[in-house]
Image 1 (tube, one colour):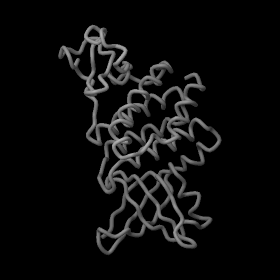
Image 2 (cartoon, helix red, strand yellow):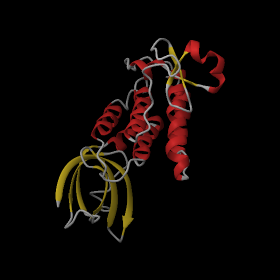
Image 3 (cartoon, helix red, strand yellow):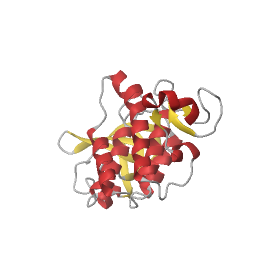
Image 4 (cartoon, helix red, strand yellow):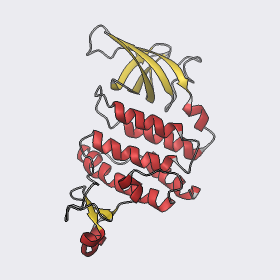
Length: 243
C-alpha cells in the first residue's frame, strides 16, 4: 500500500539510533504515524519539527502496519515562529490539539482551516480569533459541535449572546437574562462568521473560554485527560499582547 499527501507535523519521537516515529495530520488521510528512516539525521531534523508543513509518502505491505514515511519540507513554520513566543505557542497548540483526532480518520475541512490559521500566524491581530474558530470546527468534527444558529429557548436568531453549558446551544439575551450567571458568553464573531481583523481581545478570550469549556468537558475529562499546558500559555500570551 502507498499514498502521498501534504501534512502538518504533530510529534516526533526517537526510534533506535537514527530513525524517528513521526505523527502527522494529513490533508486527506487524517492523523497518521509512520517510521522515518534517518529521521534524526542532520538533514531531516529541521524538517521534522512540530508545526512544519510537509509533503509525505507512506508505504506499508498491509494497511495495519506502522509503515514507512518519506517527508519533504513545504514550509518551515517552526523556524519562522522560533523567535516569537506567541507565534510558537499558537503553532504548538494547533499541533497538540490536532492529536485529539482519531487516528487514520480523514478530516480534510479541519485540516484546511488549520492551515489557513497558520498562514496568518505572523499577524497577532488576526490569528487568535481564527484559532478560536478552528477549535469550534474541531468540536464539530469530533461530533460535539455547538448549535449557534438559534436560541435554545425561543427558536429565534435575534441577539444570541450566551451558550448553554449543558446543551451547547445558543441562548438569546432575553431568554438567558434570568440564568446569565450559569451561561457562557458567546462572542459575535463566532456566531456570525464576520472577518476576524480588529476583534477585541476580550472577545477572543471569551471565545477560547467557550471552546475550551466544551473541549475539556466533552473530550478531555471523559478520557481522563487535562487541557494541555501549551493552550493555557497561549491564552496568557494573547492577553499580554493586547491584541
